[in-house]
Image (cartoon, rainbow, N blue to C red; front, side, top):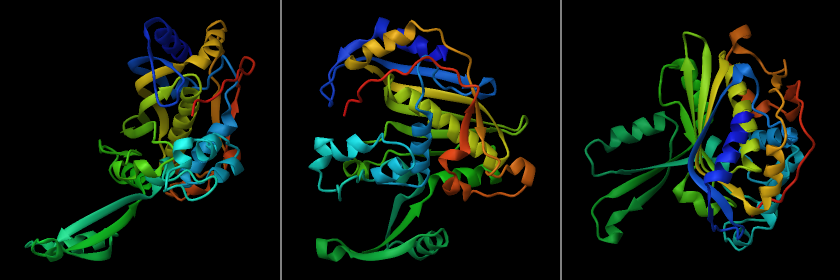
Length: 330
């Protein structure tokens, strides 16, 4: 994890103090990148103990499109508790339904992206457009009368919940050279319906058919380097391993892009202590034999995106320094 420590040093040496919504200042730099060869090991932080079980629990909650902090707790991750029940802006939000509700965050966007089509019936090809949309799974949910607004013509409104991640796997199987195998979580129409707008916003899979390898790029708009980055690295690498298992490719390069890379003021002591510690060798991620390996079975089983459990992920050879803790800014 020397790359991680180098980034921490860069922020300490070149960052500037910035104010933000949390009220806790950050030392920040614009633009950063880390790249990991997963064949050389899993990018688990070793200068403190990684909350591996919690990170995996959060990832599985995303895979199940959970919008409730209690689901994440049941999976072994308490990371959404504060944003669900202590974030004052969210507590006053009319879209918050009940205790533990976190809204349309990550997994909802990953697995149930709300897609709408508004087709003008006065247009020449409207019938063909409606037929095509329905053939691709859209359902008609309404008819809008524009004449009431002083305009001519009516429009048909259609809706479909898009499973972006499943589409990625399907495309890896059917068209692996495609350069559009990606999913994202930034939805302007639903930002106000989330306890926290997504930080890791865009994932792209890239397949090397020659070497039978799969790589992934992750773009994070805003990254808390002290607490968030270790979690995001673990989740991203684990997701790539899972996708590789289900599609028959070996995980290779994990490239991690950051927009705003920052250290919270109350995390400085923790990170300075880590810089004084010598990192250990990277561990290995082991997936349970329970998860089908397409390269062995030849059977495509994408439903395992929802069937995996926290116990299906483990680290082999993970050596780390003593645990360090710090408060998350909400």
